[in-house]
Image 1 (cartoon, rainbow, N blue to C red):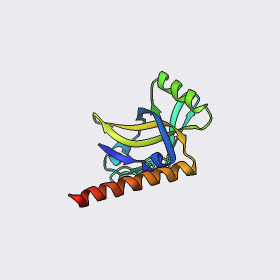
Image 2 (cartoon, rainbow, N blue to C red):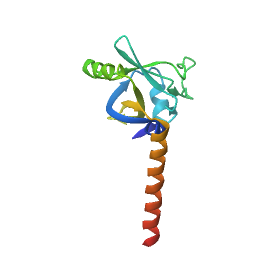
Image 3 (cartoon, rainbow, N blue to C red):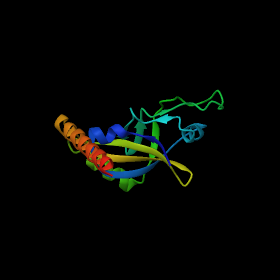
Image 4 (cartoon, rainbow, N blue to C red):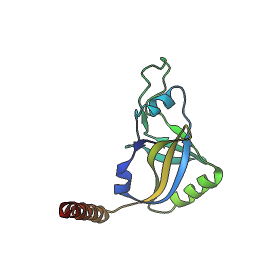
Length: 147
């Protein structure tokens, strides 16, 4: 079940490799995320000293939590194994590549985040994808009208 989605990532980047990572959460953050009170629109991922962190992810404090709720936009550690971190680091060191979060979802009761190694699109690539999407939409509309 997808809890938060980053639609802009597919518009701004060519997505290449995907990984599923766990998130290190504290306190009532899990309940808040399961309630759908999270956003990854402005989130980005950094690799620091062999560890992967997600920054800018917003998790609204749970309404029924204690007064010690964690900060809404705190830095959260992503849980990956060493081989995956090494693969991410090798790709990111190449020019033009970055790591972006795609969505936050539940997997067997655990909160996971899908991340991807992506290459940035140029403006003409974005116009091209908009044109393809528009063309697909008109084709589907014409098929619907014909039946």
